[in-house]
Length: 210
Length: 210
Image 1 (cartoon, each protein chain N blue to C red):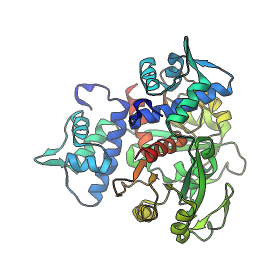
Image 2: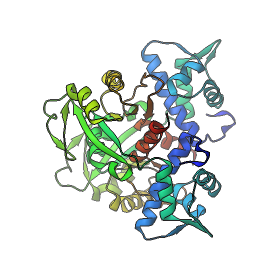
Image 3: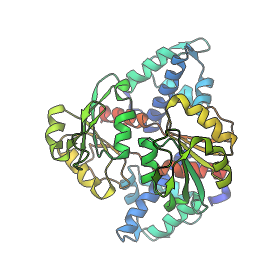
Image 4: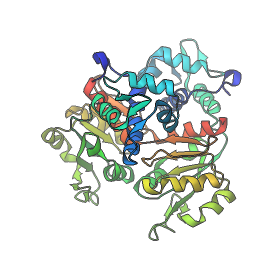
């Protein structure tokens, strides 16, 4: 839980999630303590920002000159709610959907990949990460019966809005959108955009200004 | 060019790149004018933030009650430097590398995919998006001869740092890192992290606090 239960801003949540990955790397390397300066260097910001972000946590694991990597990681997990299991469904098992299903370590972060859907006959029925890809026509029933709350949209732009509508109608509350279009959805639905080309644009800008 | 040539902050650059995709959607739908409110609604922030971001541009295409979608899009492209061609190389042609090579519209945003590398014999030589996947051993020569400036790392975490080192030694100045580890690189190298699991964590947090 965050201090005073206030809601963290999206950039703070993003930074905390990235600090978590850094802390896990430290833990793997058996480093027990990290300073705000080291964390800032690894992340690419400054120690003040790191301290401000950590200040949002209830218990920072502060130890003299630094933080306990293990305690800080645990507290970030608790703050971000990564201990409750949330079920994820992926719609569209092309290269990108396959990459998500295969490589994203959902179970390490309180999520579980519960279903994968496609419309292509040669993909439906294939096994991917212990799941059989289901026909898109089974989406409504599956989402309800498995209580899936998060959907990742990895379909072409032309069908993304209709997939979004179907997900919303069937009780999904969070959507990760990999398609290039902005989706229209009711206010209570959280949509996270993940537009790969925008990362390249950011990098292109950085490269030209360094 | 940005006003007074000042460097834009990474979040501003990211928002501008996402506004650009929204504007392009409007242009496709033949909508000639967009208000800051409409842009904010489509993006998911507020009109003040949109106006502040647009204020960084030299010429906003302001027209009475709104902005010319076409002029604003052009000005964002100019500001982000998307008119200079930058060459991109992808290292690691697994599902994710394949997804990037196949679906990212590089050429629409001043980039061109110039090379793809892998170490697996069954992938080397395959054709992907008009390129033949090359053996990783050809990376150094190819980067130099083709003057590739941006590298996307789509390899497993255990080899990501060594791929990064090779890219840097051969003149890459911008790296998009899809691996889960933080990379060590000289200060003049821009690294953009794209950790898919962090998007799911952000969404998971949003879903639990809405």
